Length: 350
Image 1 (cartoon, rainbow, N blue to C red):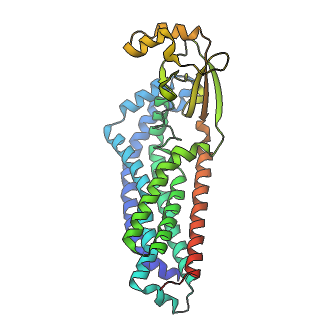
Image 2: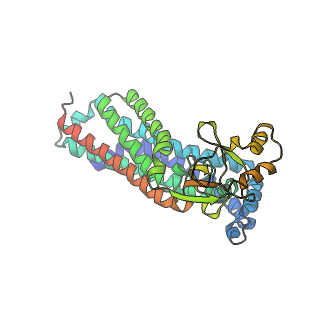
Image 3: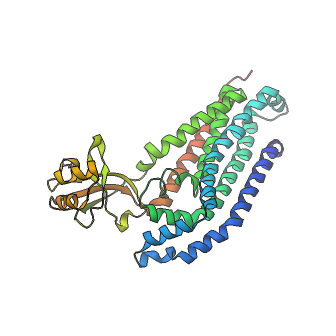
């Protein structure tokens, strides 16, 4: 049964192997120059000298535009791989057997429904995870210099930090978990709907929602956030930011602990612990409205002895988040696979 499942799967496997080969050739051909720029930039040892932002900015400016295009294209491909696996590998896996009648033929040859479905899930599911893992391995290696430089240059921007919405799901082990869940979701949708195109549409829609909702509402809560209280002075007050309810807060100062961190929330509070809306400080109102010199605002805020209360996820937790998220998605995939096996054993499929 495993051999037969492989024979049915070999066409999709060949397409995936061809796409992976093209991806590997492009990255292998362009990667050495990227690593040469990184080695020559000094970014690798910048932490010892404290000049990381300047060196990272210089490196990013030297990277040819083609690499920037390839960088975001690679991220897009890694976002698309689980979706395509779910829609084109998972959803048709069962529906095409029902539509052609080959499932009933297999069941009359002494093969139980459980063995039939388990073999398909094992062969194609493993192929899905290996494919996503190889794509991720290649992109994680190639994009390493840009990830490092962009993260240092942009501070804790949610776009470029490794824990952020754009990069996290396209690096490390998470694409494996995403691919497993998308595949299992496609199989389950196909088993319940039993028509290929509707099952593919449902798989694409549901998994796209998961990809969007998970980093926004779930990921940040997998590990309890770290907290920091930073006393604000004229020297470290460098800008203002929009707070909740159209209030204005002091932007978190640049600190080593916050380098590359994922900022979850921050508030500017007074010595009594009360939240301060900076827009109500007279010297800052004019600055916000007219864009005049920021120095009077800095002096006025420093005189109030304010603090920024910051909740964040440190950059050092990247791999902890990777393993948590991958494990959760693999567990969800196993639950869906178990449900599919139970369903096909217990339900009458006429």
